[in-house]
Amino acid sequence: MNKSLRKAVIAGNWKMNKTPSETTALINEMKPLVANADCDVVVCVPYVDLQAALDATKGSNIKVGAENCHWGKSGAFTGEISTQMLTEMGVEYVIIGHSERRTYFGETNVTVQKRVRAALDAGLKVILCVGEYLEQREQGVTFEVVSEQTKIALGGVSKDELKNIIIAYEPVWAIGTGKTATAEQANEVNHAIREVIAKLYDKAAADAFVVQYGGSMNAGNADELLAQEDVDGGLIGGASLKAKDFSEIVKAASK
Ligand code: PGA
Image (tube, rainbow, N blue to C red; front, side, top):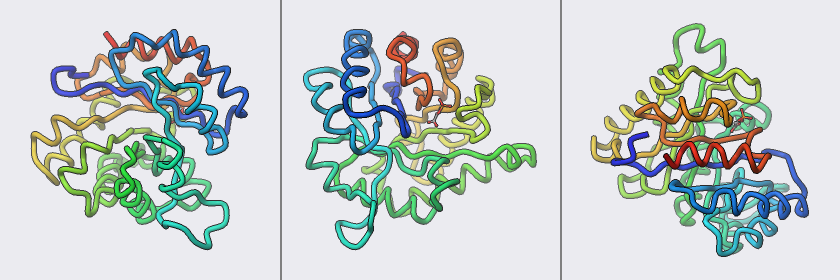
């Protein structure tokens, strides 16, 4: 983290976990533990848990996000949720392009771009996920993959709109596997993403741009990862489902 340039963001990605009543209980447990955070704290929860999360976080420093959104305003898209449905509820953030959506639900760079556009137009803050598969890392094409994902997702995004986007670099081989990228690997790719932003926009925009790391980040490794110059926070899966573990990561980002 470079706190003189950027404010860290720690976001939980609950994935398909927790019912509404469990959401209320977990957030109530988290609230006092993260109340003094010196970073932004976000929980991204399943659609049906959003209302419970909004109610439970009211008056606290925890912001609420969804885990996806559709690009259309309304219409024949069975099972999808529009950005307006989210903003009317008071949802502030949305994750777009998570590797699980790319892998299991046919998400492509093009549909990611459409969802980013719709989210920005609706005034949502976007957590855009990019990252390579293990085979791609082994083949030495990590930077190409991540750079292409970043460039396509940001197609048509103005410099002014960048303030409403952060990127989470999530190597797919590190997600939910307990296999974290080393702090150096995370920093190297995060830095490369910042360079893509500098080329697409300019250095000032790149310096101010938040790039998180995600993939088995936990209470034990957060300090080392967040100590890296270009790691401006984390997108946390498994460890965000336990109040104590999540708050330890928030504490690491608040140093
Ligand atoms: P993990 O998930 O922390 O459980 O590896 C991260 C993510 O998928 O966002």
